[in-house]
Length: 192
Ligand code: AMP
Image (tube, rainbow, N blue to C red):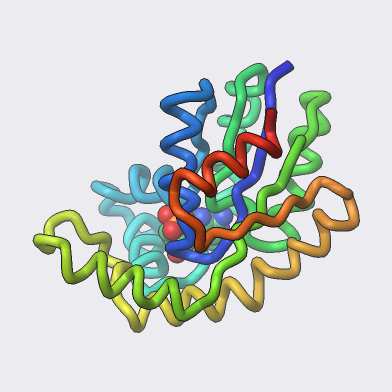
């Protein structure tokens, strides 16, 4: 049976790193709405494309209908595969939408893995990333000001999802301040 998991946590908590490990070692497909949005908007000169790019650069949330349009076809195409939802859902409406669209394919989420981390650690991680970077590999939203905005939006819009999944009894909390390997092993214990 294929698995469907959500990685939930603030920006910089390590969701992307852990997704890569699961893709490389455990035959998962990573569905990252951030990556999909960056791909769609990279050379999109339309007014909508530019508007979305700006929202992302400033650390805001892209309107639900745009994100949902992107994800809906993917869910249908990938329904028989192991999927990691990375960066989606980011609010309650998106969480409800995801449930519905999985339900229409007669599948459901197996686990929502909540990356617990101190916000101070996120700041030092991004400072380190900026310090070590040559500039070219930095994302346009990789700076302290945008990080703080993203953290505030996370607290306001995304954190309420934790209770939503807790009530559904599929939430598992992990300590995202441990080493990459320890976090990965803890994830494996949950999903295997
Ligand atoms: P990420 O790569 O997950 O850090 O996302 C980068 C940016 O893409 C976010 O700051 C948002 O502007 C946008 N984004 C990604 N996923 C979503 C989503 N599920 N809902 C709204 N905006 C999103």
